[in-house]
Amino acid sequence: MKQNLIAFLIIGVILISSGLVYLVSKSDDDYTDGLNVLKTWELPPILKEVSGISHVDDTKIACIQDEDGIIFIYDLGLKQITKEIEFGPKGDYESIRIIDSTAFIMESNGNIYKVIDFKSDTRKIETYKTEFNSSNDMESLDFHSRTNTFLTIPKENNLTENGDNLIIYKLNPEDFTKRKEPFTSLSYGDSIVKVEKPKFIKRGFSASELTIHPQTGEIFLLDSKVPKLMILRSDGFPKQLYMLNPKNFQQPEGLSFDSLGKMYISNEESDFLKQNIQLVEWK
Image 1 (cartoon, helix red, strand yellow):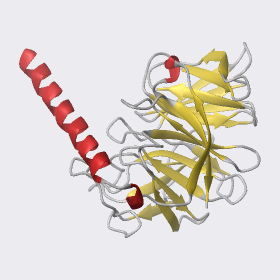
Image 2 (cartoon, one colour):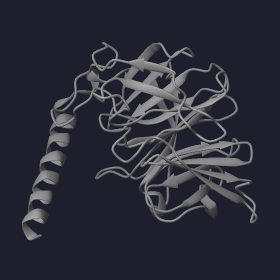
Image 3 (cartoon, helix red, strand yellow):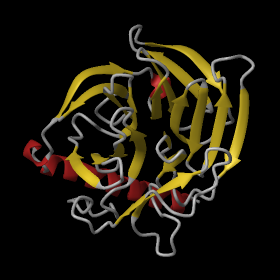
Image 4 (cartoon, one colour):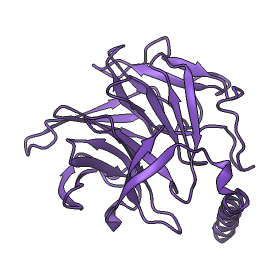
């Protein structure tokens, strides 16, 4: 046991050191222009591992964190949590999407919690098991009105035999079973995905969030390992890739749009920066 602990600590130090080397060795010129942080809200300690956000309205954002089955309602104007809503046991919750009065939460093992009338004391909670599991490391979920399905993308291995390709899957909204045909599939060898990365990162893109723009239907994908933002057209074809500066986006895990299409990105706590929600302008 002691040897395993020592080995774990050594590996952790190596990964952290590699990440620091990567950050220090890159100049600010290596990151994509066109993204500006307009405003930042520092979140309270309970949300230091904020893993997903979704707008309730233009002033309130529903947040989840990795460990607790609780929806935290954060008021942007008051700059504080105004309500906590329990929906499940301790777990590894990674994505939340509010649609009208229902909250949909995805766990990393593929489980989906549907919280009907989530703000009510008489809320109803339904749980669904998808075809995904912990090896897929699921961290994204959003409803795609044009196909009447939910879209999700594994952060790690997909459901093919070789586990390759960046695949966005479609899930039936009634029971969250997977549709036969995926929404889109990108190769990790595609130029928009194949970017410079630290040696300890296997893939060119590891999706930590998927969010659909309410006006354009474009699909926004976050990568928290080597911070990036990829935008796909509404048909799933790649449009643009932003390399995010970790000095501003230390670990981007959540993304949501308000009713005007303004983009908000949440970051987990890092060694240097506090957990936050940011209002981000992009060009």
